[in-house]
Image 1 (spheres, helix red, strand yellow):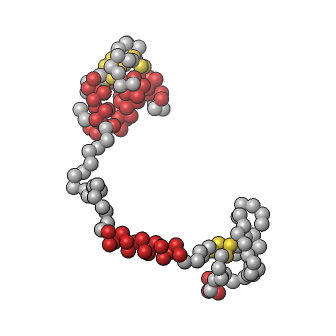
Image 2: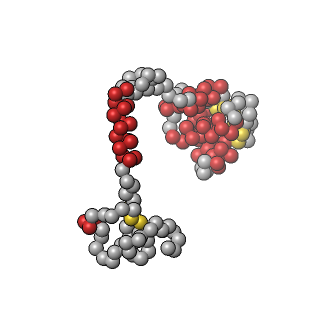
Image 3: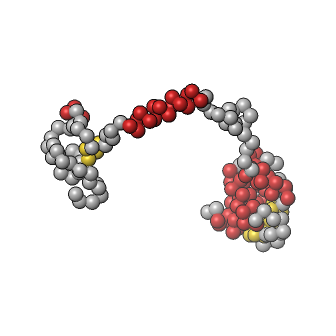
Length: 162
């Protein structure tokens, strides 16, 4: 049985059993302990364990509720946890260049031009005098109405007093 064919509680139970047993058929654990770890009542844990036993994914070990995961249960969980194969129809990056050389040079020129421009750092607070940061003069349309900072405004840490 495929993992996706199980209902959500059965998936949770089987996955938790797989984790608790370390994916080994020789280990056993109480079905009630698994249910308690999932926040379930004993009856719910018993029902889910019985359903998984009927599917051949869980084996009963003791009459007091000891169970183990079957080889089929291990394979079911492992197939669900295995990473999905990539879709071959999706584009993939290869070992070749992503952009042609001429495009790379154009991008580099644009980046160099941006780096060469004077920095414009703007942090304006309407709660002056708390803090302001202006690295270069701003057009008046950018400055909010109200009190203006002194012309020698400097960077202040907003978490500390200036």
